[in-house]
Image 1 (cartoon, protein in one colour):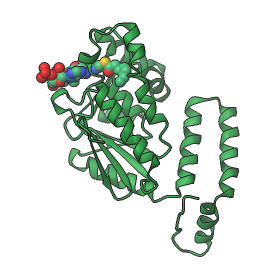
Image 2 (tube, rainbow, N blue to C red; image 1 turned 135 degrees about the vertical axis):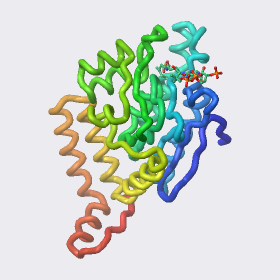
Image 3 (cartoon, protein in one colour; image 1 turned 120 degrees about the vertical axis):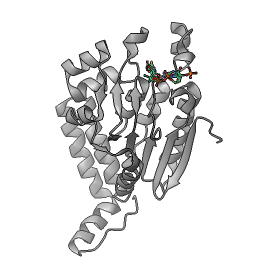
Length: 257
Ligand code: CO8
């Protein structure tokens, strides 16, 4: 597929997606979201890809959903065009996804980062959900995911009153894994993703599923699912290989089986 709003590359076992609408601060229009969804679907299907990095480049991650696309839309049009549903393609990715955030991550851009599994931020990263300033609310997970992460009171301030978090504050509140100098962000994100890609793929997938369950369901459901996934991994060749390699003091060779 020819992409116009994103750039897609392979770096080792890592699939890299770069949002590429600099003239609109990477605002997420329908084309961009459809292309992102396609790229993620392709990476998910490609056995040689073990992890994905999503970035917007050094200047801006994404300044939100494209306001021009939505400005005149009716409720019915918004429901019909599946704008937000395209976000769900991220939830179908079972491989780990790292967000490399530099500059503004606002509105849908912040929600895109929040839908990833690990967030690395540059010192210039700014996180915010300014939707109420233009008459709407976050619609792609912001009110839910942010609140789970930073708690009710800070989430209320950010969502109701457009408080932005600097990269340092975001790290303080557990919204990002760590903060890096701008020029190191992409390399470190790729290195982290490469490290994830070298681990036992079925175990990494199961671990991601179990952690997400902690985020989305009750503790008792999560404990049941975790136990089931744990037992199920004993039917994989990778579990046998991983434990054997440990005992033989050598590096495991994963088959993804
Ligand atoms: N949509 C469309 N165009 C945008 C957007 C956007 N979200 N953000 C910036 N742009 C455009 C500007 O219109 C401008 O274009 P032009 O040069 O043609 O006038 C260009 O990008 C540069 O922007 P600015 O001149 O405004 O740059 P500044 O550095 O002065 O300001 C800001 C940067 C502060 C980021 C400012 O651009 C801004 O406030 N942007 C809007 C932020 C916002 O409100 N985001 C939320 C949008 S709503 C949303 O995300 C809802 C999500 C729910 C569902 C998600 C489904 C995908």
